[in-house]
Image (cartoon, rainbow over all chains, first blue to last red; front, side, top):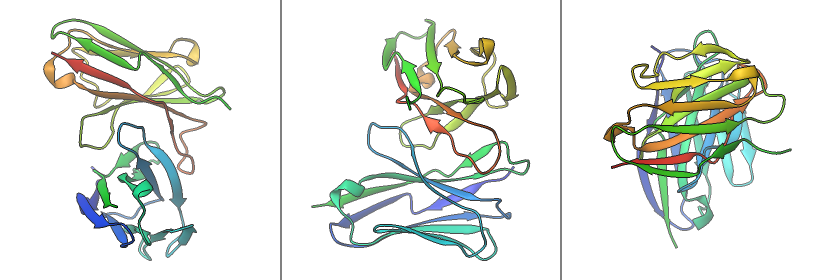
Length: 111
Length: 115
């Protein structure tokens, strides 16, 4: 079945450093969604990308969707301790009714 | 608008006991999901309802798990009997439709510990 692979699994950075997580699929995706889950919390929707090559920004977060719609990235500029959590990508499978989740990238930020 | 409500928030039971979780989705949301999230992993879809019908329950361990969504609103998820490996957070989520351009809204989850 369709899978989305996410790397790295863990990332530990110093506050102020940049962070990037990548999401890859062997098949073309209809769209890609990104979520953030704080420790002890639940996943919270961040953004959805639909178009080939799309780039969206939310303050220090930049989201990209690859030209072939098979990969995506989330980049955080100048991390802060509030960025701590696990970032998940998710995409809808073939008939667009089932959301397939990556395993997530856990981000730790040293103050 | 009010979010997805879940209860209880925490539950500790012994193996072989039964447990039930309750979810009230966002008003008007036709699609309801139950996810299981084991510590350190991503959410795993257990069952997806569209109104009161089941869309996907392919990953629901049907020998011990059951779920219902009577009247297409509230939902309950039951585990009987529980096993140690059922220890996880059970997340309920809802969305307006199952189309690809929407996303699920998650509740706070129920943290289950099976001892």
